Every structure is written in structure tokens, then in C-alpha cells.
Length: 241
Image (cartoon, rainbow, N blue to C red; front, side, top):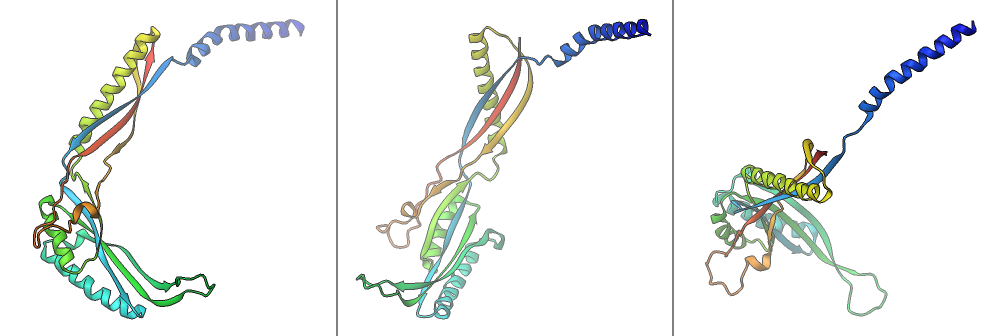
């Protein structure tokens, strides 16, 4: 019986000696180098988003709402006359708020209700930049007294983003070679590539830049689309030797 135990122990020891190097080889993780790269291109925006609306006041909420509705209908009609499709007009804010008078002295009295304010705004997609200036003028003439700003965008950014991707990959590769040379290692095959996200931040243009009080009557509102930065970030991992 004792001889059998020694035989089993010897076989287990031999199996352990035989399998351990294989498991160790499989468990050995390759040395890696991970680098991030950034690429960006510039494109001229070809569409814009305008937020415009009407603020109306009244002694009662119903009175303010009626006045606001009348002017908003005129604004919608102006948009239709300008060739803006219904799908490109979306209500972005609507509110009815009491207007309070807090007085000028600190008497401790509660504020006095003096009326109501109704605000209704829409976001308009303008698909031709050349139409933007005349549209702003038309909106104001129709009764809009709120233009909160403009943002520009590139409608088809894929080609520009693909160029940014190539630049990001080149940037990551360039930096990886610098690190490899500095550390005395050699870059091996690429093990993984991940994109951190593409970016096309809107280019804002605020009301102060859009409306000029000294502009001649009837002159279209001056606008400038400029250029927009489209960027991509990537992370690349190489095996190093």
C-alpha cells in the first residue's frame, strides 16, 4: 500500500513538472505600450440652428397667452414663407410666469403680483447658410423679440472625420516610436485600437453679434459661419519587444 502511495506521488510530481512550463508560457502576458493620438480637421459649416421666439406680457395669464399666441402664429407664418419645412421647426421652450413687484424698500411685505409673462421659443434648422441673414430679419419683423443665438454645424462630416481619424492614428504612431526609441524597445504588432469619440462642437454666434442697431433699415442681418473643428481621439496598444 505504501509503495502505491509513493508511485502516485511520483506520477503527480512528474505531471506537475511537465505541465508547469506550458501553463507559465500561456500565462506570460506580452509587454505593451499604449498611446493616445489626436487628429482634427476644419470644415466650413453648411447649416445652422436658430433659437427664436416671443415674450409677451399681460395683466392676466390668459391675456399674456393670447398676445403670445397671436405673435407666434405670425412667426410660424414667416418661417413658412421663408421656405422652412415643418420638420425643421421645433418648440424648445414654453413658460408662463407671474411677474412680481418686490418694491424698492425693505418693508417685509410680500411681493405684489402685477402681471404675467409668457415665453414661447422654437429652434429652427436652416439648411442654407445664405438664407440665414434674411431669415433673422424676417423673424424680427414678424414680431420675434427673443433670439438667443445661432450654432453652426457641418451636415455631412464623415469625410472630414475620416481624415481626422488618419491624423489621430499617425499622431499615436509617431509618439509610440518616440517612446520606443527612448526606452530601447521595438514596436511589435498592434494589439488593439479604440476610438475615444468624435467631436463636432457647435459654433455659437450670439445675439450681440447677429443684430446691429446701427445697421441700415431693411439690410439683411450680417452673419459669418467661419470654420468648424472636427476632431477624433484614438488609443492604440502595441506589443513591444
